[in-house]
Length: 150
Length: 192
Image (cartoon, rainbow over all chains, first blue to last red; front, top):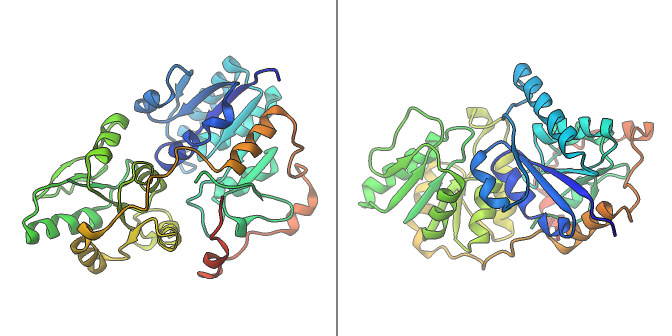
């Protein structure tokens, strides 16, 4: 199997901790990482590592800057696959990934026990593999349940 | 050392103050709190606003117990290092986070036996008194479930068809499910 380029995106805290637990799935491929906290660099060894601004959906200027940063990273890395555990950076990254022909995965955070996150709900229209980590939140037309980060 | 952590995004003074006052009453000087962006400061325990990743992991590693908001970063890191953890969920109505998702997180992981839970300051006092008897339920392997890893691998290798058809008009029929109280907890036992 030809190694693929993977861009893995997560914001801070639990999103990042969950993304780190997916790394065995990237073995044999070339993964790059995007997050919001420069001190996470030590978690990914020699893999390419990018820091973007930590915007929320309430901050329009921050979101625009975040989109520009992500577009630049996508053009530079040209990933085959974009994977995110949320939140805003992953949502925007997945939207932009379409334009370079990447296939995309959203894994909604396991913190969303009662309902999907807002980003996780909206990303469903755009993403190729749409997953929740709770069986009771899976629906016939997605998201699907395929195990959890635990 | 008891390590108190509230994450980097928002303050959670209600939790830190509870531990601070408990430490004074019990004469405990072995707590350290990461309190986030707040102007209120503890008076009886050591604290810092933020920790970088290596400092954070070192604090968890050297702690005997973790006291935290019900954030997945705190819960998973404590479990990966085999540390017992007591959580108090942030509340949406007090603007401690955007909604009550931490209350649901706390309840379901208590059901799994992963965390002790204090739903308010009164319970926090009682749970802190019992903290020395709290034990971790073994260390968590540092990776996702085999099922999720292989689903992802299959997708990356291109062997797996997409789970749904993007932009399928049928999906509009399936609206957001309403919260059904705690009834999902019994169905959520196996998430691997």
